[in-house]
Length: 163
Image (cartoon, rainbow, N blue to C red):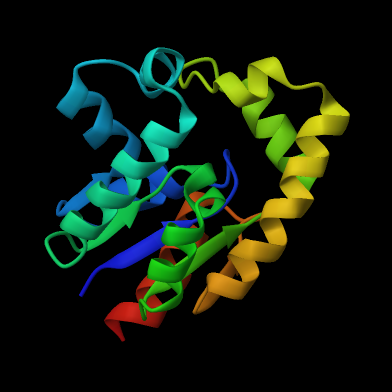
């Protein structure tokens, strides 16, 4: 069994996965290591459709091998990934309101997110609302991270899956 974390960039997926279990995997990091380049570089060289295919194959190969998997915010852009996630039983949507996510993204100087850097606020907000609908449909559990500390989100997740 793997818990699969989905949600918009800045929701806390990678942070929560790392704290939840030593047997975690960050899907974007996995792909970056596998191809020895950042996700953004891979997309620039090979295109987004090639990346989504690699993302899909990687997700399918990792489910069941890791206790928790942190996905990239765009994992749900692929219909194949949507179908796969819909059939999984432990998909958790880490949800936060747009303004909260925007603040988190602006403060984060470590993680480079090309979509955040390349879109104006209105486009980013439209993407957020479009994806939010899909995240909610695919999720077995939804945890609102808006006003919660990391420890609180972690406690809720543990309550769902370790109780």
